[in-house]
Image (cartoon, rainbow, N blue to C red; front, side, top):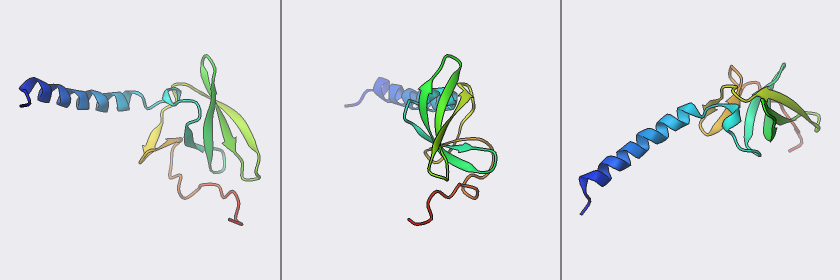
Amino acid sequence: MISNESLTSSSEDRTTTGALETETATLGSLPIGARLILRCRADWRTATVAAFEPERVVLSVASPTGHTYRVRRPRDSALSFDGHVPVLGEGCWRAGLARYDVRW
């Protein structure tokens, strides 16, 4: 039989997990290697968390020309999520996502 204590603790775990998700929605909470969508000047691009500095996070950004470059953003930059995809920036990213290679 399942006791009332185990039922209570499992429901408490779910509420705690939900609270943690809202608290950890910052760029500094992502692990190295995490992929995200980044708002650049003209369009949206894919990026990867490359390194952590004391106050900033280093992102490796894919350029449509085939090169990559690095940008630094504050650790406390707020993230939004589109499903499970982290998004850094405001606006509709699906309409403005950079085209990388039209041959494929």
